[in-house]
Length: 517
Image (tube, rainbow, N blue to C red; front, side):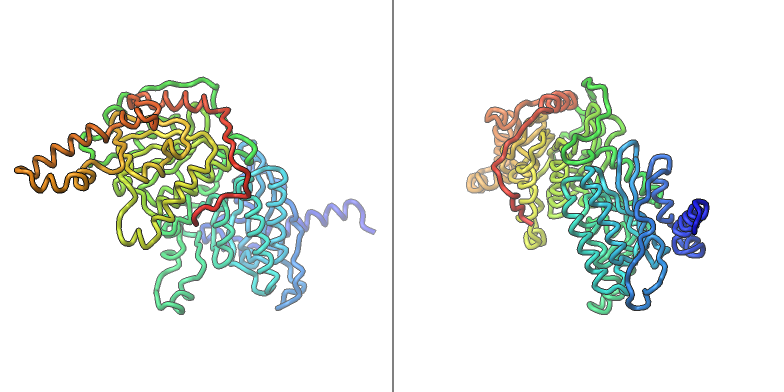
């Protein structure tokens, strides 16, 4: 008969065994590869390194392909919960030292249990991916496990924030779980994500490419847009997750964390009055405006490597979290293309799901023209922005900086799409199209027959600009609430946000709208 001391000793032995994962040699190999272990990542993620590990003694039950009696500590995934900056967060951290972190039925069950607990508790869920993929030895059981993970990702979507860290391989079907989550952080050099690897691609298409070129951090952030943040190493990835969570509510019934006194700080930056160039064709950096308007040091850009002609970021205004969508005139003159449409639409829908007010900064000459864009579906993709802003019920504020032409202006959340407040700088040009294009259409014959075609064209452009391409015409029609001095932008947004804190927007009952996918 075992004594209490015997039972305690056995518990310590089992705990030590599980903490060693796949053994000392494999832990050392993990470190040599520049990666932390599954436990080390969670120790760094949670406050004071403390987390409550659950299901640590779960084992696989497979008897096929040599799996019978095989010991896989924690079945290759560490699951637990704890506090991150004082807030409850649930996690799973795959252990590459245990059979390559491969996903079997019980491995998947543990992950689903953590997601289920996060859903019930109304708390964020963070998944750290470092896995060779499906556990082939378990056959269809592994496939069933992945299916359940995808199902729970979908259940959690829009209810609690989901963040994925790609800290190692994440290939094949495994890549779809991060894709179903809200944000992906990938570690440069060690993280890789793709559906079919280089060898499969070469066999199928004859194309030659390295794993890093195909599925590395930069490729997935800048080319495919799957990855939102690139981290230098595991520690940097953990810090990104911690900072990101500081802008997000625990769930869709709560407001984001508030860091402030409740007072409105009306800072006026005279530099904003000089930021827009005199020549409407000259670019400038929209980020300079954002840095001047929002609380210092609070801009947290998302998707910074992808579709650079569109900026999406979190920021704080008087301590309150907002989501910012802004054209970037320094890239493609701020025109909206397919990638920019997708980038903005996804961010808009996330902010709306989690009660984060949306602020648009508009300087857009139109949707990007071109055969490639048309055949790629710019109409369908651009419609996603129209749908996303129209469907959003959070406070929506728009500031028109310069160009605001045609359907692209509407897509940036004009009054017609439900913007609660619209302000314009005196430099704003709100029209169906630019003055030059409009004159070419409206006065083509008159210009041709004029004694001085070039001079007459210039006169007509000036007349059109004076009459139509200014904010006062739009203000006269109620499309713009106020024409403001640029230096007063922060004050305007501060008051507008405060007045919209109790906004209620009632919509027709329906299961969900049908966004053009």
